[in-house]
Length: 461
Image 1 (cartoon, rainbow, N blue to C red):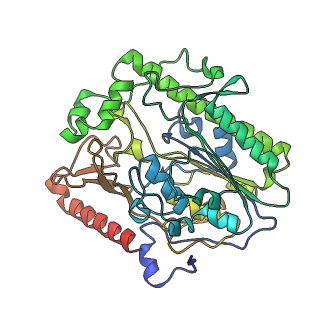
Image 2: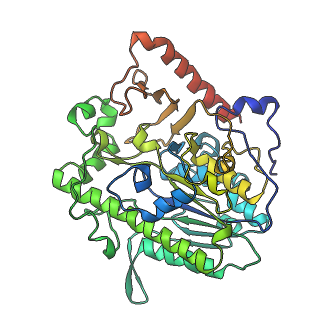
Image 3: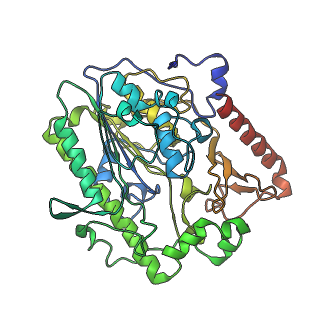
């Protein structure tokens, strides 16, 4: 049975610094807004022009950010697609929903807490297109979505005798979904791109639509400051021999290969950007633009040779930090284009969508609604953020982390003696491990205790 949140009081108040128990629910507007949630795969936060990247071509995402708000501090609580996507659906930490790779499907009782289930139950027409990335028990996809089209590699598809890129195909399905929507019924579309995820089994790794071929041809992609042997050698042995290093050899271990791979990654993001533009154009054509909210996010960050590593999984900023844009066309003009410092998390997506729809947020949800920020209001302060990666896989170290604006503590599970502690104000690249600095021993101990406290609250929530 689903229990819903009310006001913040009693024991619940103690959790506001953890995950934000704030719902911000408002009375449902008339008519209720349509909602499109767009998710990309392996899309790090700085891969948009509006995020300060002077090279990447993302005019539609830049416009979306100008029309809405862009979070400069958006993170995923677990930097891997399976667990992150389960957290997006449920609004819960990995420790709570327990789903990641090789784990049993998400439990049915948790699926009744997800935003598509609750929206559909309240009368929304719900759709899903693209990479689901989460396993449900038999029949549960049908209980979440009125329409679902899931897909997978290869990126190039043959459709009606024509060759089409998967990103463009996903965009076509999205516009068809919009064309099928009834004017008297609100809808929620979850569009989940595979791009810019690499095809790990392929030598080429990255694939993009042909129109992107000319993008970045005459550009020399910058090499990350931390892509040095010195930084790589500073890691413990279990990171130097991890899957992140293996995949680095697939993509970034040669200067020529590095240029080819990074340009491919950029092109795939630009292809997603073009589809975002087509979706907004379709909304205009259908007369839906003025009442359709768009939320854009990445499912985890990505190493582009940083630290001489690849992919994600680890607790460094490149792995945790993602793009997040929230656009509400009904929001007053004076609040558009803002870039709030308040952090946004993947566990905030579900309560945010429910809040927009005027649906009470279940008490089990551990994220907080971001709707007040869209309207220039405040949300409960998060002084400390909790991150975790609990997949039990030998080639990727399990880890947990607590981060504030000032410091970050990383702990590797079952590997005592290898904790990391960084002064984020003076060392944003996270290259000087201060875990054994005697001057900071008290602060380190404080963060170790804080990490244990946050984990305890997640488990007992």
